[in-house]
Amino acid sequence: MESAFYFEQAGVGLGTDETYRIFLALKQLTDTHPIQRCRFWGKILGLEMNYIVAEVEFREGEDEEEVEEEDVTEERDNGDSEGEEDDEDELPRSFYKAPQAIPKEESRTGANKYVYFVCNEPGRPWVKLPSVTPAQIVIARKIKKFFTGRLDTPIISYPPFPGNENNYLRAQIARISAGTHVSPLGFYQFGEEEGEEEEEVEGGRDTFEENPDFEGIQVTDLVESLSNWVHHVQHILPQGRCNWFNPKQKSEEEEEEDEDDEEKEEKEEPDYIEQEVGPPLLTPISEDLEIQNTPPWTTRLSSNIIPQYAIAVLRSNLWPGAYAFCNGKKFENLYIGWGHKYSPDSYTPPVPPSVCQEYPSGPEITEIDDPTVEEEQAFKVAQEATILPTEEGEETEEDEDEEDNYE
Image (cartoon, rainbow, N blue to C red; front, side, top):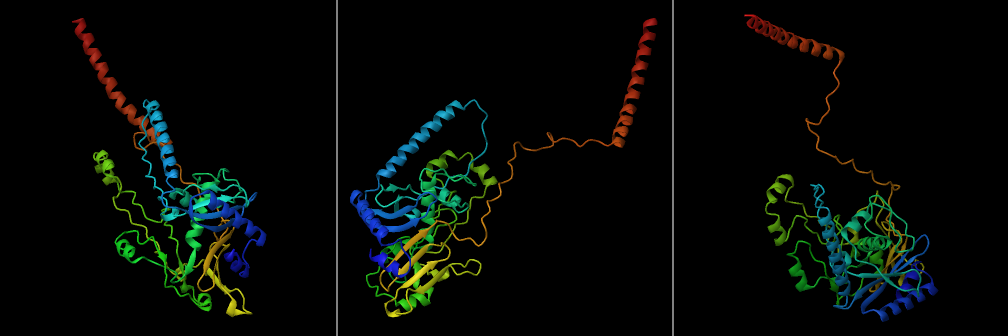
């Protein structure tokens, strides 16, 4: 409610009545689940109904049930696939090798650092959204769909999206959080022990803590310079993960199984893949890229009449509807919008890829061009020239045989 008071000064919010009902709904959520931390993430608008989104962090060890359920479903899927393989032993074997699927990040890390609950209206039951996968984030960047407000609605698009609206909603939440969640410079800091250990890791630092010595920043400084704001959510790489995964890296068991095929693969595919690198955590937002000469952020004071009591308001131009405020020490982030990223050009679906080759093309199956009339006549003359000598030879042999018979 305190954050809603400050956002109301910035001209952002949902009204006092709806805000209080959301507060009660969040309180109900924390009472029914083992939640350590809960905050109002924002509201995503839909064609039929809207989504109230809550960002949640469970207590230690309380989020293991979801992993067990996922493992069971994976085992069932594997069993079904084995049965299908037995039935398809007699069919021709396909030599197509599918690219290795990029695994999703574990809970409490990367894009799955937090868990999200949604409901259509305050007071209705909260629904937990599934963990996001890299494939869903990659495809979500290529499509643009309006939300309907129904989580089980299929996403019909090209490229095809791997999931329903609940998966698409979760992917958009991850993208918006990574791009728009900011905090004042110095509010968060890297732990000393963790920082030394994680400097050696390729992915860089991915954890931080609140700075107990943070004294606050002047509101005028926050408005005048974007360097006083930093991103405190990890950047999502083009791969769809925050921490890069090497698809060429294999486990020991896979290496033992694939020893015979390694030589062929080395000839066909390179072993080295360049690692994707993004901006590290706590990077100032002043380093964000512009969009066709449009700045990614806009800052202003909530009131120019009484600036000594005003707060700093930050608005994202990349994700319309994303706001942040700071009164010097306290800050908060909020999103109210359609869940679409700003694009200077009108949306055009990507072109379908070229048709795959059905069979290898070679000289033994390539059709010959039809000969011209001159070529046909020349071929006939050459053929007759070869046939005449053979016929004459056969006649002489027959004559000799007849003479021998008479004798």
